[in-house]
Length: 508
Ligand code: HEC
Ligand code: HEC
Ligand code: HEC
Ligand code: HEC
Ligand code: HEC
Ligand code: HEC
Image 1 (spheres, helix red, strand yellow):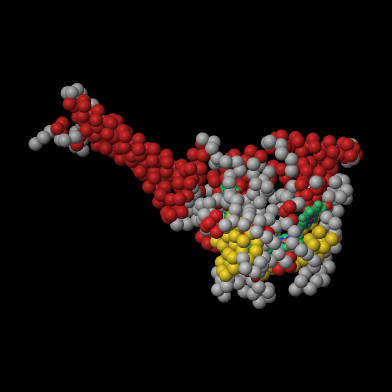
Image 2 (cartoon, rainbow, N blue to C red):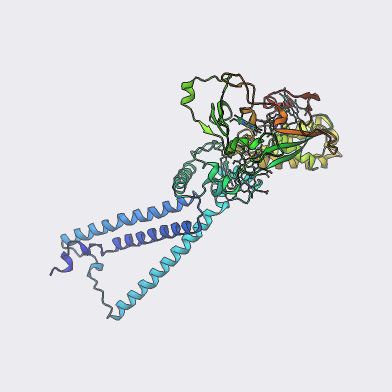
């Protein structure tokens, strides 16, 4: 029989270094295992769990390195006949009282480690899984999305539900991209603003449609807006309209309404020209009855070869609802709301224009903006309406406070995130939106037909102007739109966003 000294290396691991390595392996595998089990059982995850897995992987790798180093050292020590280290001389014998004591301590310490690792993994899991973690871990980077998310109709939907969804492949994909993001933050290499569209965002079918039913008949939605005009009185101009959202069932609504694009019976595909998909070169529709039409934008006029090399997308929810959880309201919209709610007094002359101008200026930082807004607005009134610096100063002070608050809630200079970086594709006033395809340049090859731009095919105006309580319209046609710039009616197409940008450009 060979003695333990020569058992082909079997005993080499018995040294403190290898022991420590085995301990690390144990904790690493155990924590990882626990975390994985929690994810599986709860069916929930976030990309940031990747950070934890990374940590456990480091432990495991360190363990794998330490064990052989210890073994090599022991082997060398034995070969050279030196004292191989106290550990290898132990014999374990439960008949000996102090060996029993050691065994018991091992058992207790071992169970404690298992227990603590379990609790630790569970706590970390809960932490990364929470919405606050996603939004606040990388405070600077995610702050804009976090603030806007909390003001959105989806403030109760967890980030992971839209950004990750369920299933093993996306689980792995999101882990990798989570790691990449953490790295980008660590080395400060992320872009400002974060570029959209997000290319590895999961298809709407597997996120939005887990909660929203695409065949649902949504009917009409009433939209009521109160604009404050740019005159001295900031006079109010209302717009009350029915948006024809529609859906599968079409008894009340001629055609199928706006949700036509994503109905199962129709397929709309398009090829964008730019990264942000704001300019579209080509559109193809395949209708339920088998009819197919291809439209090309005459303005870009790309050749077939050029088109073939570009991304071709099938339209889904996110092509219109691109801001379901992070909408950055425009200065015009925010100021209109604040005046309507009485938080900015309509009695301050030209306050609409002054507020929008103050919000459309670049300041380089939030603190500078807070000071800059107050200075700019005060200076204007000092020169033009000094009573607002004197006896009516309280009114102006509270208006300024509200303008500063709007800035802090919707404009994020450190990430360059605001309404102009992230246009909303619903509508067509401040960015092309629907008019990316519904315009005069997008024409069918043979016939020259355009995708319609007729105003009342998408919505019906019920009332507009200063009186909107009385509604008396033909529900087939609605009213013709009166443009509050010159109070003339507009019925033909014009690209609204050429003048309306959401900021103060419209007043120039
Ligand atoms: C209702 C679904 C939904 C929820 C909930 C949601 N997001 Fe988003 N998020 C989106 C969509 C859609 C986009 C835009 C995708 C595009 O344009 O490609 C987006 C974009 C983003 C972007 C890119 C920058 C930007 O502003 O567009 C970040 C960062 C982001 N989300 C983080 C978060 C965080 C953090 C949370 C939770 C606090 C969250 N999201 C919750 C749907 C959601
Ligand atoms: C986990 C479920 C869930 C997911 C996923 C989800 N939503 Fe929603 N969504 C809701 C709920 C709940 C509401 C109603 C909120 C309310 O009325 O306060 C809502 C409201 C909406 C509204 C109406 C908003 C308004 O102004 O009232 C739109 C549009 C919408 N969702 C689009 C989307 C899109 C697009 C996606 C995918 C990016 C999505 N949702 C993903 C649950 C979800
Ligand atoms: C062609 C653009 C377009 C597409 C594609 C689209 N929507 Fe909409 N959707 C709209 C418009 C426009 C409205 C009216 C919105 C408004 O005024 O806020 C709307 C309204 C809604 C509402 C709110 C209804 C309400 O009563 O407030 C929900 C929910 C919704 N859409 C879900 C979806 C889902 C889910 C998908 C994908 C399956 C989808 N939409 C695809 C344009 C679109
Ligand atoms: C990517 C291009 C594209 C975008 C963006 C787009 N549409 Fe369309 N839309 C189409 C095409 C193509 C058709 C079908 C035209 C045809 O039948 O030839 C269509 C048809 C429609 C219809 C007619 C439905 C029916 O019953 O006939 C409505 C309503 C509509 N769109 C509203 C909207 C609204 C509102 C938006 C913006 C929120 C929008 N569209 C954005 C391409 C687009
Ligand atoms: C392809 C569909 C479509 C066509 C064509 C269309 N609109 Fe719209 N429009 C919309 C949608 C969708 C909204 C709702 C945006 C929202 O919910 O914020 C809207 C909103 C509006 C608003 C309110 C804007 C705001 O945000 O305050 C006005 C005003 C308006 N449209 C006027 C017109 C006029 C005038 C025409 C004809 C020249 C026209 N629209 C053609 C889809 C369309
Ligand atoms: C040639 C430039 C131009 C175009 C194009 C244009 N507008 Fe305007 N619009 C203006 C100006 C300037 C005002 C400011 C009037 C004021 O506030 O006194 C205005 C005001 C408005 C208002 C009042 C609310 C506000 O923001 O002050 C609405 C609503 C509006 N326009 C809708 C539209 C729509 C819808 C279209 C496209 C169909 C459109 N406009 C196209 C220049 C334009």
